[in-house]
Image (cartoon, rainbow, N blue to C red; front, top):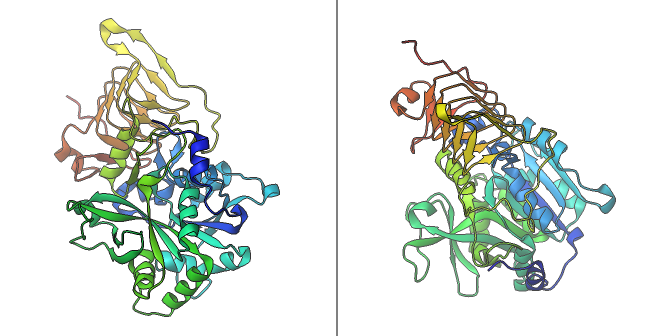
Length: 432
């Protein structure tokens, strides 16, 4: 049963706080190396998602929908497209003291760039002291989920915690890629293990582990003290998961876990929590396929919790030709087709198309993701592929049907997803 906005407000009233006393810092400087060609020219949070969004739009929508709109975005790696997107798409009213502002790496504390997630915040601590918040939300900018952050913040206040860590159960093999939490019955964290080969199981669930989502809420004084102490340690990796959180737990600070599965978002099914770390090509592709199901695991159509992004002046999508006798019919089934697309006699199935994609006659696209300005030539066949922007696929080309041949030219993931990089020159099929 979907819950109402009033039910959410009732559950999240808690102790109460002024949103002007909460500062949000989004960590958006990671390289995203495991996304291969998709991050050759852009930061991971700037990678397109769901046809018309960028990955960072997910976390920004969560905060804006939660009424927390004093946001700083810490950037570093190939941040130009990310900063352009933020400046063009995310305008809040300065009259109400709201802002979403990128902070590029500036070497403010020495001749080095960000050494880790904690060092990124440490080098930007002047922002914290300038704003003087009571609480600081430090969230990653590269996950796909919906979350009413007010509910996590309310728990942070109610438990009088110094730091609260959002977490979700995952399978133990999957948990090897995350920080894993051991918690007491009252939610106090007794141990934090960062990316260990044998994650400790959850009590009563031997096949599952409690994974950190990389989302933290700090009481400001505790955060600044922890950052200062960590910065002086030469042996530290200066990372929240590897250093800050485990050290605070070991030193007896009040560190609590927040169960993300308890979070209730207006318009979403009660008790259902979707969260995906799309750090690999296979995970990224799978998350896109989650969008196109009849009952999507991640719902883009919940008007009570909108996913926000910039506006486009592109015209509506267009489907042309109905020459069924010659199999020349422009159709799309179980797919997302963005503005400006023209499906001209081609067939699309279980695919995601960004703006201004053109699919020409007799071509067939299946379980694929096409970025903006992609052109698919006649009689082309593409299966289980990701085609980056500004790529033209010549007529008759086949991608995804012979992975050995595809590997000679393109990146192919462990799961068999072929990635065509941005502005790649794709050769046509050999002449017969």
